[in-house]
Image (tube, rainbow over all chains, first blue to last red):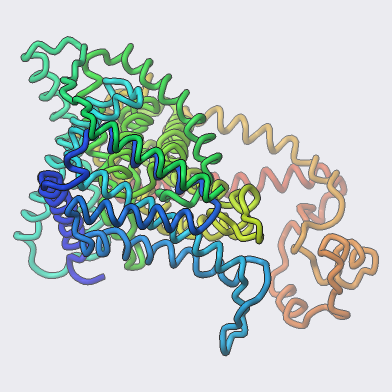
Length: 272
Length: 357
């Protein structure tokens, strides 16, 4: 193992999450199509499209929804290169690696033979791999669009429309905040360790450091939980939760909700 | 192990959401009752901890690295119900905000990791640790085994969910619509990585964290250790008194070992050179091996190597005994005795090292 690869890798991972969160907040403030819609419309509409893609049995239907997702991204000022690097490339590499052996392992009509090895690519294997990759790319694009174009707090409040218990909505909102705080804490712990280190950290020492860091983080977490509870009590919290529901549906929101459902229904009908 | 959207059919996703819902409901009700207003901060902060721990790139023996899920440590510190909710919340945020795992597959991911993982981890930890003191090394072993088992059970469930997709959904041409591999490929492919890298990462994190908590914050381990002494003597070993039920079970198993004589024929793949020269046994072997023809003679390597070591109790039947039942029982007692002796010796050496260190 390279010296301190584990510390370096962990710090990079934490920074990526913070960067991701900041970028999402910045995009959610832009003046685009999805940003201007009621969060409940976006949540229900995009969820409807995801379910339609999951249920479609034809590639044309999945491809159609993917095209709709790209149009929505452009209208919402979500840069396509961000989608390409953050979603499409990653999903393609991961799912492609999983789907690749299916080209040869799925029984069916051979359409091509791999030179040298002589393994046969079957029509059914190729089709199965395309189904998998296209479905993953489309659903990942849609879910990323929802998060990129909606502040996280609004996504959570919109969950109430799906009858998610209010206590769960509040816990999700607080968890998100404490994730960012915990990441900042653990990043500082790793940075301080790195700044005091000379030479190579062996595997056993790296493991000891990782476990000790997780242990300290766990202790801090439990202490933080107590502190947060006391702070909530001091502000009058007695166990009842209320969420301000400031959303208001306009004519435009209703129109887009109908359009989303119409697109989902069309995808389901074409892909039946 | 985070299943993305598109790998599972909507029917599978719906079934797993439905399967997960009662656990979420019961967990929420139980925690509301027991924690009341403490529920929200505890769950929020612990879910955040689980999320961050999942990002730890743990260095593993051999130079590789792996990510742990942290489900067993959540089950050990919080108990199974709070762990189900905390891990589910962390998985929801991973899926929705960070695109790690799908939205339609969230029910499946929660069912595999948060629900099955938490319950397996908790039950394994409680079963192995029993009522031994908080500071006992047995708790460290229990946490490691709980972590290893929980992650592998979760992976097995995910593999089964993948593996049944080609049976459930194909298009008109016969192409699989979702995860394309059948069970016989999905299970080995999934388990290979989890029995080695991911399982090891979970084992190291769980066992290491429990050992760390024993030294630094033993009170955090008391929620799932009813009846245990608050601070135990780490060098005290595994608490042999607490092992009494296990020893009783082992003795009962030894007493019924002669049942093994009732089984006829050899275990598949455990044939001796003599079996391969006996025509009746050859017919049996061919019948249980899809009628594959056996080599006409005993393979040379097998013949040569089989005589390298002659066991003192061949076929669990010591030569000096006439009764096969008693021979079987004696072999079981001898084998178990050797294992216990090795465990006692290992424990003694370890305790000595600790004292001198």
